[in-house]
Amino acid sequence: MESWRELQKEELEYQYSPSRWSPRMDKDAVIEAHVRLTSEGTKKSQSMTETLLNVPYGALEGEKMDIYLPLHSSGAFPFFIYVHGGYWQFLSKEESGFMAPPLLRKGIAVVALGYDIAPKGDMDLMVSQVRRGIAFVARQYPCISGLYLCGHSAGAHLVAMALSTDWTDYGVKPEIKGAFLVSGVYDLLPITHTYVNAPLCMSEEIAVRNSPMQHVREVKSQAETCRIVVVLAEHDTAEFCRQSQEYSQNLQALGLNVCLRDINGVDHFDVIEKLSQEDYVLTQIILNMILRE
Image 1 (cartoon, rainbow, N blue to C red):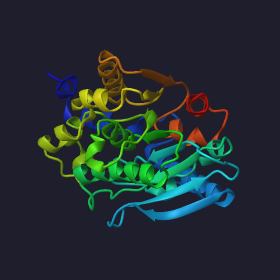
Image 2: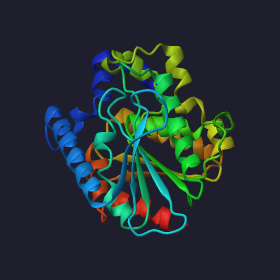
Image 3: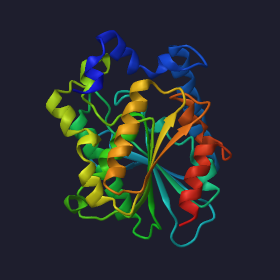
């Protein structure tokens, strides 16, 4: 029996409410600060480099991306694709370019990938959109020196699902060299028993189908050469920690190149916000992986 099933509903709701676990501020303030910081950071990124905004990768309203290109790069250069969080029902690419400056300075392009959040988008659609967005970048920029994926919270779930993709269905083979899964959810079944599922309307069947924990063998077949970093914040909830630990252990058991990193002194929100700082430990982990290729 899964350990989460032993929790009372009130405790389960608490475990899947990361804003209630921040030691910095209360639950509403931490979300407001997150939106403000990431929005302001994205505007700053757009003011300092060449940007291609609202690039469509499909026909639906949410199927657009913002591309931040380094100013002084020639030839092939790496792309860093970021998928935002917000529990699949909040945030957008408009708050997703905040981490671009340290990467751009090192000649790395950044893509903020949008998707249709709930209730407009359902879980099957969102997973498909992220996969198609990645395939679009690979087709549009065939001279990429490597693709690196990063997702935060719900975005980490979507990136993990992308790692299990059979790319022959998309007519392209993206060279995904690295993935950074930050404070993610890898088993959606507990979510179906919480308030989070109200706009998502996931059945248990849909949750199982879209749970990365159920698709580790596909990661083995599709992303064998990809280095995966599963990231935890010190002040993430116990359930978020359990999920990250179990998912990374399952990947490691298959012989994949996976490490679990616990970032001290941060909560579920500033663990990703601080990517705007070049000297931040997670920024350095990302840069070290990409630049040593």
